[in-house]
Amino acid sequence: MTRLTVAPRDVNRTFMNFPFVEDLDTLKADITIIGMPYGSPYSIDEMTNDQTNGPTAMRRASRNISVDLDRYDFDIGGTLFDGQDIKVVDVGDVPGEAADIGGHYRGSEAAIRKILAAGAMPIILGGDHGIPIPVLRALDGEGPITVIQIDAHLDWLDERNGVKDGYSSNMRRASEMAHVDRIFQLGIRGQGSARFEEVEAARAYGVDIVTAAQWEKEGTDAILARIPDGGRYYLTLDADGLDPAVMPAVAAPSPGGVSYRQTIDLIKGLIGKGRLVGMDMVEITPSRDINEISSITAGNIILNAIGAAVRAGYFKR
Image (tube, helix red, strand yellow):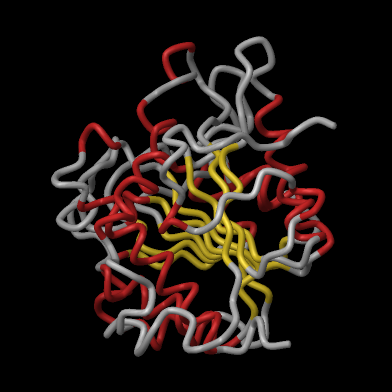
């Protein structure tokens, strides 16, 4: 039997010390943490860039988030699992092979399909922002999907250096998937990969683009009101979507970003008005971090998502 995942690089450290599960064929869980370190590189130098260390960094930093999960969390409004019998596991990382770069995406898609078949909600640790492409492919039986992206950048390039599924093309590829119904891109600001033609393509598709300035001015409740109620949501969260004051470990920091509070309030709102079918946290560049604050922030965002899903009754039997 071929394993779709391998143990985390630091084998003594899973995310939040959740149990490590090796076999996706016998998976029994409500929520599954999975690392996807590798993307579809635009150049040879990007094959093993520092973002491939993101899953390991988030797992290691999780030791500084909580002494024990029975502690009261004032952001969540109680203990993480709220007294319920919830099973969260970490299944390790999807491996990469130098001789088969595209194999990581195929393995990632296959792993997500296994997780969904087991009835678990996937939470993905990246890796660069190409990761949503194989994940969204695996969600083809979960549609219609509303994609919610928090990011400084638009990510609508059709290709770069002949590569069509890299980190600057994730929303372009999502727009081509029949089961993706709507796309909301939040926190957009400054300059990135988008040229005029990419902005026009996104607008022609019907993307609801909310700049960071709009979000700050209008408030999170107004942004949530734009998103259809009762939807099935996939959240992809690029670290540079947040302000570099709380998320400094990014390759392309941009001032004036989304706050931690805005982020967790948006997630709680989404979970309360529909079904979050999965989420990812990508683009953390650990060597640029300060006192692990980026990975700690990412971990707290994930815990708030778990806590909100528990309180919304996602896992009640």
